Length: 349
Image: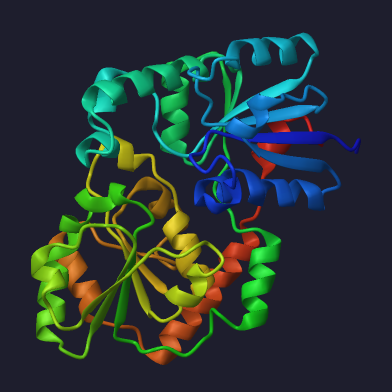
């Protein structure tokens, strides 16, 4: 195998510190570590850092969420192509497409973007997508969306993974097997974009917490907690924490929930909440998006209705069941660390 050099470039809002963006960790840093372990050389830039002084010397370039709005995007891509570099676009959310998809995005629904700005952003991202003939996507539904809008591209699914170093670190700390109360439920929302998702579980959660005063709910992050939930005495709220501190905080919970409203945008979302729950030794109850279904019922509990949520939340696992689940899920993380899509598209074998 010939050693190659790979440059990851991410359109992240954390321009000065891309490591602080969980999306960049999953789509750049974790795959980069896997490639390093295979003998290649990798580096990670935010788009802001890279376009200030582009380097044309790498063999392979992975553009995470490429956006045509970058003033020198066309020139940089054209220059890299002239040099025969391999260029790959990478996506972990549905951020491109027509006006209908733009208006149905979580950014519009939660007021993060105006409808006009969302339409412009989706169009710009779509133009960026069409500049590439090799694309990786975090889920199968997202890959299908890529094929819909860029039918000539070679597209491969590259699921999110947890890196070797993170797995080893948390295992050495004993995080997955840390003792915790069976009655603590956690909801970890990294961004405000989940405001529309909380109502999916609100009725069931309110009922469970009202009927079981010894149950506790920990809500972490900037999500808007419905008043009916926030007013309960067994509910507490904490600010979002960085990625390295997340497992330690999540390990206070026995169950973590990942509700998502039914939408085209959410159908493309990935298994990240499962990865975080498994790393922390928590059972996950989640809405049945396709990528969660792929993981399988031995690892995650899927809840499609209010009754499903109520039943799952009302019945914490016993200590023996919980430990068996924790061990199965941690083994899953170890067994699913492949970045074969990058090896294929990047010609890294």
